Length: 89
Image 1 (cartoon, helix red, strand yellow):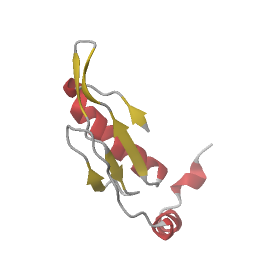
Image 2 (cartoon, rainbow, N blue to C red):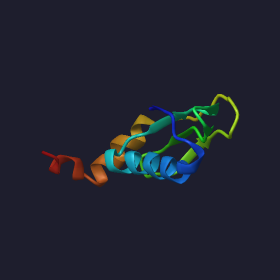
Image 3 (cartoon, rainbow, N blue to C red):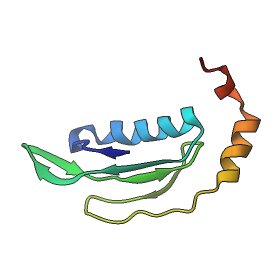
Image 4 (cartoon, rainbow, N blue to C red):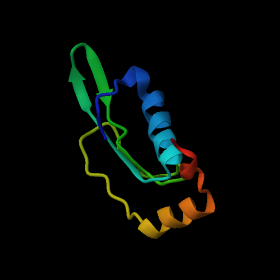
């Protein structure tokens, strides 16, 4: 998910990425802006999060490429062990 989270909300960006991964039992890739603009500073913190909310890789406050290995079998295993997605309406 591309984003423009400013430095003042840095903790929110990280928490919400982890929450999206956990609640969807999926890998989440978040790419956040870096630099300055519109009187705000953007600090990046782009990240790849696993389905349990663990950070697999993250970037800093400069432009970078963030990579990590993802395992589709891990998603299938977690979804079969915790089948709460079946309860969604």
